[in-house]
Image (cartoon, rainbow, N blue to C red):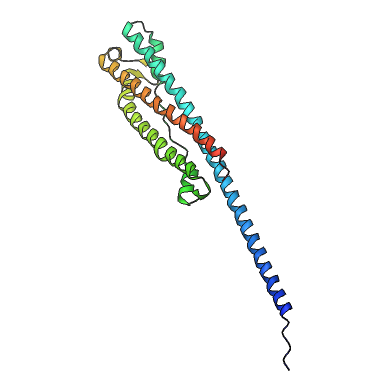
Amino acid sequence: MAKKLNWKYAIGEIIIVSIGILIAFSINTFSSNLASNKKHREYRESLIIDIEDNLKNINRIIDQQHLKVQELEVMMNNLENKSFKTDSICNILYRQRKSPTFFPVSGTFKALVSQGEFGSFSTDLKRELFNLYDAVYQRTEYNGKLYDKIYVETYDKEIHRILNIRTKQIEDFDRLQSPEFKKNISLIIDEAKSYLSLLEKCKKESKKIVELVKDDEG
């Protein structure tokens, strides 16, 4: 004779199995959320470091470009007034041989894009980050390269023609006081001022975005 099915026992087993499945699913979801939150925090912290590094570089370059404009304007005024001291001109020409420009740190942003990890960031913050990296930074970097090109083709050629880099002595006084030299230096001053304007906008935008990233909790 077949045994009578114990419905209460069967139902109890089903309930226990269902509860086990729900618990396992909840634990899995919880673990997944923890991992996702951890990854978001890591990306967030890395973005903050990158943008703050960019701000440090921008501030350093702004200071150096301001000094460039200031010294070259002093030199130009002295040349115009014929009141210059040779040592002073030599020092300015030698100091301003280099013209640093901005190249952004963008490793974290590129990783977020390539790995599709932007999902945990708010839509507004994503829009701001793409604008910062793909518009503001790229425009500043592009104009910096143009500035570098002009610098090499004008100032760099002028100082190698006028100044002995090894001895730091003027070798061509006629060229130093020529209209062509003054024209080229004026061009560099104008380019430096334009580049400074871009850097200031870049700095302002970076400061805004880094605060938004700090406030984003995912």
